[in-house]
Figure 1: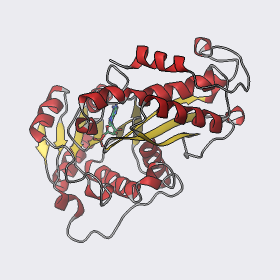
Figure 2: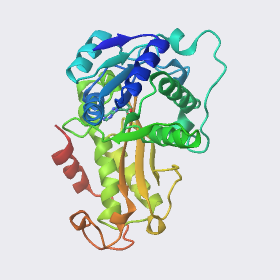
Figure 3: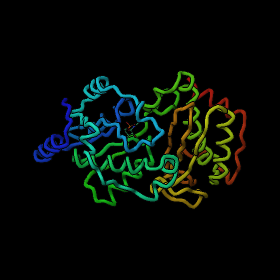
Figure 4: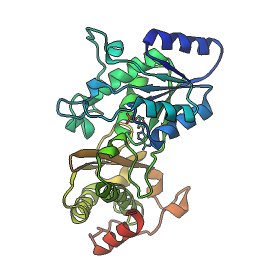
Amino acid sequence: MKVIKEISAIQDISDYYRYTGKKTALVPTMGFLHQGHTSLMIRAKDENDIVIVSIFVNPTQFGKNEDFGKYPRDFERDYHICEKAGVDYIFYPEVKEMYGENNLTSVNVSVITDRLEGEIRPGHFTGVATVVIKLLNAVKPHHLYLGQKDAQQNAVIGKMISDLNIDVGLKICETMREANGLAMSSRNTYLTEEQKIKSSVLYFLLEEGKRMILEEKNFNTADIKENIFKLFKQMTPDYELQYYDIADNKLLTPLEDLGSFEGEILISLAAKVGTTRLIDNVIFNSVLLCGFSPFPWLVVGKKKGKTPRVKNSKKKIFKKNFLV
Ligand code: AMP
């Protein structure tokens, strides 16, 4: 495995592999790698000849009061993780190499970026879209591997790829979780042990929202959200649920009545656990909402329009299934 720091060098390497007919993959990361990242690398290696992992903490996607300075970094540790996962190259540029002295160009994807993370973190997705297109132009991969964990980011990058006719195949990989459901994230290192345990409430509430839709047949998203906010407050009164959203997974349009929607449903949330911000989501297809389903074992119960109430027994389900 080689470490490459210059754009021109990684471009030459990529040209060589394209010329010799090899398939190449890019896994972009900000480092401090965990099993979520390695699952992307392993799938990429499985489906391509050459895997390039980029490690770059991109300053332009952090807001002024965000954690750019303290974002965890440990290159030596990352190096060994990549080596073990069968990675061929690490692209590890300095900020100066990526942005030069006088960068005047950025990429802005509109509409999808107006809500959710885009609303709370203004400018964030311009930073993300810009760095991703720069990484794609540097590495020139056939395939780009991203994790479902960052669903809005995936929608933004997917739209950018199609709007700008970028010649790369986008592959979305499932979210890797701790045993208690907490989505793996480099930012989990900010959490105390107690916070890690309690944060399992996030995945529980995503699954709970999905259950209300599929089992209770509650298609009224305002009602579901109200219930979820109540549950969150009961279970973790000291944390803040910034949003709990039910949207179309393509354009992130908010959904009100799920009964008339066809497509992929994205339930996403962001929460503040102490000073740490965590995001997570689940995605499923609206085909599961109707009585007829290609996966009949996933659709249980037939109650229509029933409003679920917040029950204490929910706490028990949560404790039994999600706390370690
Ligand atoms: P990051 O280093 O946080 O910028 O993440 C780099 C890539 O890894 C992004 O495509 C993320 O969506 C993906 N990723 C992060 N956490 C996970 C996870 N728990 N499971 C799967 N993919 C992940």
